[in-house]
Amino acid sequence: MGRPFRFAAVVRTADSGRAWADKARRLESSGFDALLVPDHFAGPRFAPVAAMTAAACATTRLRVGTLVAANDFRHPAVLAKEAATIDVLSEGRLELGLGTGWMARDYEATGQAMDPPGVRVARLEEAVAVIKGLWAEGEFSHSGEHYRIDRLDLLPKPVQRPRPRLLLGGGGPRMLRLAAREADVVNLGMRVRADGAGPDTADSGRDAFLAKIDVVRTAAAGRDVELGTSVQRLGAPRDRASWSAADTSGQGDTPQVLHGSRADVIAKLRHWRDEHGVSYYVLHHEQDLDAFTPIAEELAGT
Image 1 (cartoon, rainbow, N blue to C red):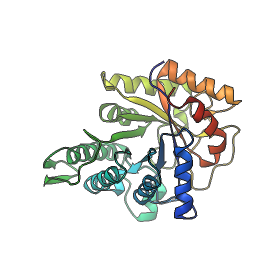
Image 2: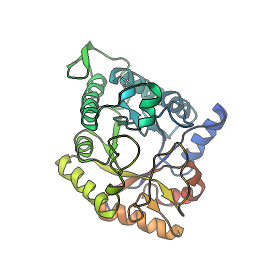
Image 3: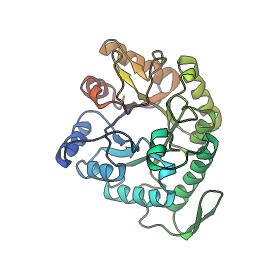
Image 4: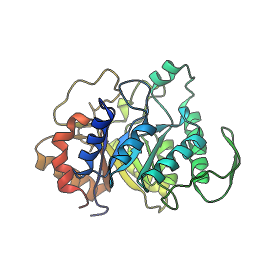
């Protein structure tokens, strides 16, 4: 059977602090393990650090995290400091998701050059080393192509030891290999187009998804890595939001798309967990929460 199921939900915004706290408490009481906040400038979304802190303060068990913090917009020393602070304030409930930054609109809107994918992945790899180093005991130094850290003892350290869980998401082979080596959780998705316009639809379908699992397992070389993915669609197809780059048109035979009856969805999730080891499911759209909550309540922890 493998790992027990874990469920998280991406929550982007609310009308007030009270409404945000209510959303966090609803997840906590409904079989969800974590509330995750995205990190984009485009679209109606809260900034992740403040949103995670508020959600943690409104709950006692719910983990909080990012899906995912965009490395190109956040120096790793700053992110390590912010993340450690959240881990202390939440009493050890942080789960930090990291990514390169990929959405072209974020770069265009802020006037930042968007480097080729290889450069962004190399920069992220250094950032992961910096964050892990700064979370460890004592001073840390680093001299690399992208970052330099000089004998910095970052305090406070996170509550979770040896460190909070790291989630890396991706679909391209280089990103998946990095995630397999460095992350605790790998969120499997479609490869993103180099121009940042959206997912590469040529990378869709069951065979491509299974190939990603094989890449991770080979690169992990025996490391205990949790496999997850985002539930991009629950039920019938619908129009995308203007700010969304998601494309699920070719993903119907993967766990990113769940359709049919409640029993059908549960059977599909069990299949992908039992046969392929995918145990961590992130609900991508809050509008699916009512329909997905009974499923999470039935399967969570089993």
